Length: 461
Image 1 (cartoon, rainbow, N blue to C red):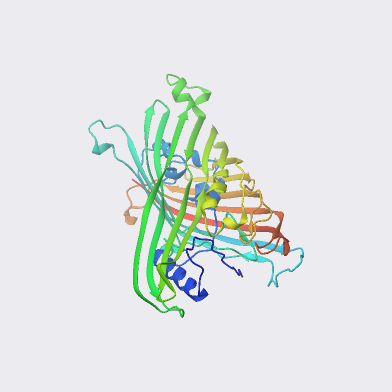
Image 2: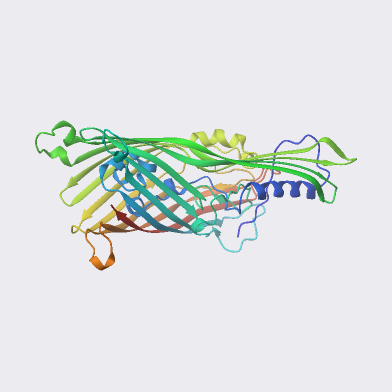
């Protein structure tokens, strides 16, 4: 459905003598640097949707207190909330129907319906949590957590795309090829847990040199490709108020927990540097192309939450501050998406989540959040980003089998989780335009619906 017209504003030492030449060099460099492309976006799945069913079902409101392996992303201190080790596998599926309804304009596009993007996101999830205290002499609990998510069930680990768009493209939805985090959590003092983790992203660089003719036939090619991991810190703190302040006797504070976590910003980035010489036409240093593009941006996020357990009912409230203003500066270095003069605002997201233990084995979960759009612009020439406020609601359940029949050969508890999440995107009007004209060619009304389904199976040991 999407028709895009890339406008690349990288540096060039001489004017191009052949559009075909520019295309061949760029495509060649990118194909070697990255695998098949996903649609361009600046969102990432853990903060847009969640990771495991617990995070999806509670709209991330109770993620700060969840001791499963996704704690390495949300709050590594929570790894110490449960002494059992875990091995988790899961499947994630998100269906999008992202729309841009034409309201007319000077030269509206010939659209085939209002849908801009309906490409699903499908991930495989793998997580591990284990106690490393047996490896030390002081026997103090130290929990290691690892969380991995890969797009298209592992087939698009390194996919990357950055593009302009005539029809408009949504800022925060679509696919994130690789999500990876690893961290530690431990008990610091009575009722107080501390944790630290790393979010790992990849920055890729490709250098290409070639000699070519005006028809694009190349020779003497030299290609160098490198991808390096970039580590972004995550820190977290958990406190059970009762255990900390009235540990010698029971009190109402025993059911009250506080949590604080901070995740540093991260992004995926690719740089392509290409040099081409055309004997007798463009000689040393040749035609220089330098392309830099950013994708899957996560703002720095600071989250504070509280949870209280009313018997079988647990209620949690979380406030999340996201620093999107940094993306304004990031895109100034992006040679594909810098045309739009995009501006972003920091936002605050309130979340509320509820858990209810129907029985010892069965727990119901639900949550809701209201997420304001960080995008200030309603016009971004060439790039034409669309983004709206959205209401997020979730629902799910957990089933725990503390003991399975002997013929199933499982000596430890197992847990099955399922989560569903719905996003309702509020309507917002945008003007589509390009840099060749000062007048927008079309006005559209962005809206949409997103349905997310996640299931996971966990073995505890």
